[in-house]
Length: 491
Image (tube, rainbow, N blue to C red; front, side, top):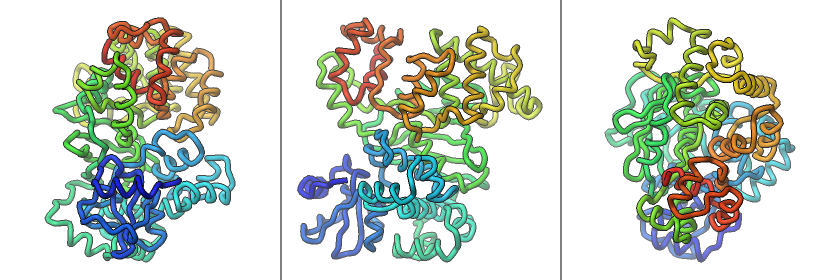
């Protein structure tokens, strides 16, 4: 990735938070690397180098600044929205694929040789997949050191290190401190209580319209899966090594996350999925500037800056929600989904689920996450409560997921995923586009045939005929997914 020195240096000189995560500032005279917004004295030009990733800065021997914590900056919006191989690789690394399957597993998922993948990542990120995964392991380890009372050996393996020695060497190199010193220096922070409970902050680029996110999730909440309560979003997670639950509370400059994990090795994937769920790596300044240039959207952007696209932690869950939501109201879809979930859990563990539910079927204690494709296939006909055609569409989707014909991970090739979905009976363009927007993170999807979108367009004085609206929306590129969210809110 090319970094223009003058532009980067101006961002550093003005301490512009908008560029945090876009690049990292290396200071050769002190041997540290920082966020662009670091409050320290601006370094002299001759002592500055700019890097596209923390791993690239670490690769030349720089350590992380203790003041601005560059490893905790929001992720780059570039990798959040890009659909090419490098963007997909960055999402897979964030989800812990290298830690679980190694570089061969990452290369296999992407369909490239290890050598070619290393070459592409090095050219764009200044570091190969191992170095990028190593930087993430160091950050995960630091979070566990500062927020739990786990032993150092437990933290080393939970963070993905192959040995305690590798863990110690990496943290000394990245933070210029021994792991025990990081724990001593946690400045009175209280460690999380309870086994597998971790509290941390998820940074974002302001502004963030938290109310819009919570409103969106609240009207679509499902018993045992998610709920909005007391200003927090609670939901269950299915993770590589087990299950988890998270409570997300928006605050100034960050989202407070409290994670309860059955296996702490799932910390990095859980954090990556929560960030994706709330669209925390978006660049709202760029998005809102583009949309506000349209006089029809300008008042809405001024009144509600920082609208995000609520995304997904589970692609299969989002696909089932989309199929059931076709041509029905949100309330109707929610009732149908609730019946399906209760029927599925009757098949799996009726007694365990009933113990957590009240007479109305609402779960009292904790969220368990959405059902898997295998669990959906086990539901009898009577548990679906929907027309036969839609039931068979769901089963066809579940079989395709189980057989590996369709991949619904956020890191999937978007065009390939769309082709696979559209080949299934009962799935049309609206469903495929809805998944592209919410499950796969495509920032440029306009659901012009959606009834609520058309109503929102009419309310704003825009054309509500789909072909005409499509032509009009060309001015909103490449942020038409965010325009879709604003049209929904206008409706």
